[in-house]
Amino acid sequence: MSRVTPADNLKSAPTRAESDSVQPVRPSAPLRPSPAGPGGRGRRLAVLAAAFVLALGAWGVSAPIAAADTTFTFTGAGWGHGVGMSQWGARGWAAQGSSASQILGHYYSGTALTTTSTPGIRVLLGTSASFSLAPSGATSFTAVFGPSLGTTAAPVTVTSSGGTIFLSGGVNASAAAVMVDVHGAPMRMTPPGYRYNRGTVLLLPTGNGSVRAVLSTSMQEYLYGLGEMPSSWPAEALKAQAIAARTYAQKKVAAAGGGGSYDIVGGLPDQSYLAYEKEAGAMGAQWVAAVDATDAQVVTYGGGLIDAVYSASSGGFTENSETVWVSAVPYLRGVADPADLTGGNPNAAWTRSYSGAQLGAWFGLGQVTSVQVLGPLGVSGRVDKATIRLVGTGGTRDVQGASFRSTINASSPSAQLMSTKFTVGGGAPAGPAPVNLPGGAIELARASGRTIAVTGVAIDPEGAPRVRIVSTMGAEVATREVQTVDGRWAAMWNGAPGTRSICVTLLDTPTGQGVPIGCRDVTVK
Image: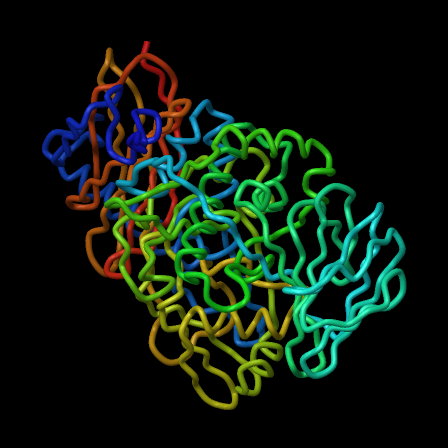
């Protein structure tokens, strides 16, 4: 058993290259001279404060907007729940040189990579009034606990009545349940329209006139057909995906304990199973190689299998489990994820716009004139547990963030909110004032010898905001937080030679919502 650790290149705490000697600098010892003359510093802060009040209005944070403007723009990041591994993030880390073990250690805190025996798995392929089977070669059909029903390469139609399965076409027979051996020549089954070439398909009557199709196969063969990540992505990202998917599936098998007719669904809400289509697809051999290279490897915490959840894109920061679901899971903690924003991620940032009339119709409020996110927000800024207040001509309604998103997505399938990591702008304010977010700027980011210094200003009408500083150099990531004092903040630390990107985010008081204020490149020679 080897320890899955972020290692130096993926730590969310300061790395060995960038030590943890964070030294907040008091205003009495600025790293850059204040304006000359008596009271220069005070005048400067006053000017900055006024500028930021104007900026807050420009950003749509708290400034009124004309009531005639009933368009609401949602600015968001990421795709999916954002808990655990980000698939785009895994791609980004791998492209920067991180190993599969380091990627998993970054997303699943305090876990271990373990080699263990793997069970077989039963995959629900679908339930339908009928299935059309199209073998590409001789395929055998056998009654469960009974005789052979025949072998054919011709199409077969499967239906059921009561407790009996009926076959017609290439094989004409009936049985209480039927097994179809799909080892070898691929057989297409419609629905869902995929080809299967590994394991045995079990056809079962549901008792209500439909047929349930379940594939029994080995864990490795199941993973060969998993369509969760493009096969063209870097090998270490594919390995991380294979290990996470195996862990997820193996825990589902353990939870089922052999009961019921299947262990996992070959689609939502579990994993996307494409069977032979994945292997036969472009660069499918690369995915199969990743599955083989990680044979029997799973992620554990405290000796047990973890819930290895993952989503397409974190939007730059993953989320704590209890924000999205219920329980606080120790290995599902939110972490900074700058690699998720690289490699051309199409969902790194997105916007959606809806009119007040649309929102009013969807939420039963006439025409909505105000949308306010009242908090609390998750560590990543997600609104799953936040209260979203909608004010309209037909009244006021408070909706939890997760329900708000699901209602919009059900009502607007062509323009959906990709995640709950979003902010809202537009409309006319009504009721309680919107949340006042902080504003600020980076003043200085430079290196003197091995010492890196970053300073700036920050203003929050509701209290001094904390400042999160994320330094990324290649695959090395270090995250620090400092407190603002009298509208200013600063940090110093020692860094290894090289160029790093330093990004700064202000954390709102009291919600904790993050407001990025920019990035700077700093080189230590």
